[in-house]
Length: 292
Image 1 (cartoon, rainbow, N blue to C red):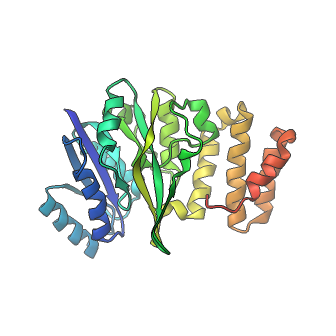
Image 2: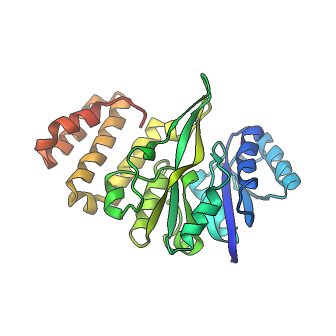
Image 3: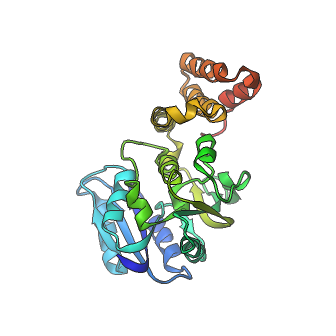
């Protein structure tokens, strides 16, 4: 481990090099300079994209790590962390972007004893016309969320927002590779059990929404992710009525998006049994059509 070094891990899969380069450049222009960048190539073996990415890393003096085939972002991030040398570890999706002060401001808070630090961000829409809108956690921001808060709602967001100490990351065993989606949510829940979390009340990253493939928009993966969360944290949901209702509504709504009206109704009833007085809230949550 190198003291004060920040390791930035960028998993990449099926992404054009121009987009990856945008993410890399946003790290290279950080006001904090003691940084190593690791790109973990998750493309299929012998992919033409892999050849391009490997050459790009050689030219840019970036640590290049090739996975054995497409194993997913969770495994890529874990492998990147194992091969990193930094006292601090951060993640950046290959189609996202950091603002210049993100690293310096987050490290300043980690040095104060927090295990994980996150920030606000903006959604950038590019497929129809360029537009920037507040990212999910901006409107219901909690500066120091506890486990009980996160159980109710993911107040943190994506992996591109978070930075952790090396000790914190490995003490919770990194990302759970069995999660096809919502792995960032699960990771933050596990961290919050034993570490203090801090949110910087500033926009420090851009999350791009575009017409290319994004796991975050995969309804089937989202459903599996929520089901795994329900199973993994069921004892905690059972004693927290609002958290229980919310996870049931997430699962119910996922089935609605898949047009499985029977299971949509079953999970809506399951949520209603826990606290019948919140029936209107449950119906609204289980039927809203916005993106998961």
